Image (cartoon, rainbow, N blue to C red; front, side):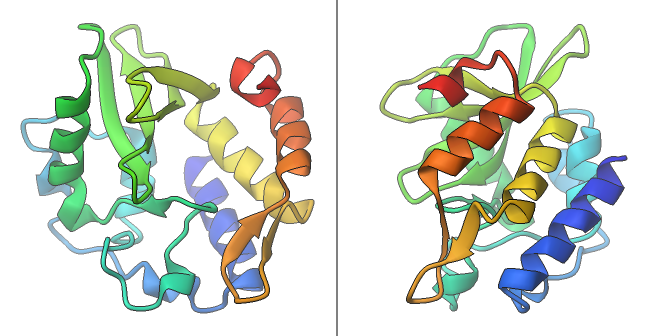
Length: 186
């Protein structure tokens, strides 16, 4: 299911930015090694990094930076550094695995969070707040909602060709797809 959703995300991203998938690079054979000593590889990361490498912080074409508006997919070569940066900024509950997924220039992260009971979701960590806020109840909800943002034209290219979004539509559609999650009613 996650593989199909990620592929669908790629297809929708092509409609707005045909070069975007290519900019993510092809997966390397040794991508799994970055998880040694960190965690068992969550399915979402297996799906993503077995397909692509991500976006480097210093990418040449800034118009291809964003996975979602304002956030890039952490490049596999920068994953360990991003995890260390994230861990330095805060203390996580002992029963939680917190892994960086998307990051912005301010070191705010969308994180995959899993507790030892196997529950997982995508949370936003804002560096100036220091806590995790639930945004999507599962990796599937994350990809389904982002796909819906493409389908409903929440995401679009601004006048300069950068990925942008309609804040009001995003809140409405995000809330409808993630019912009861406080993030969407802020």
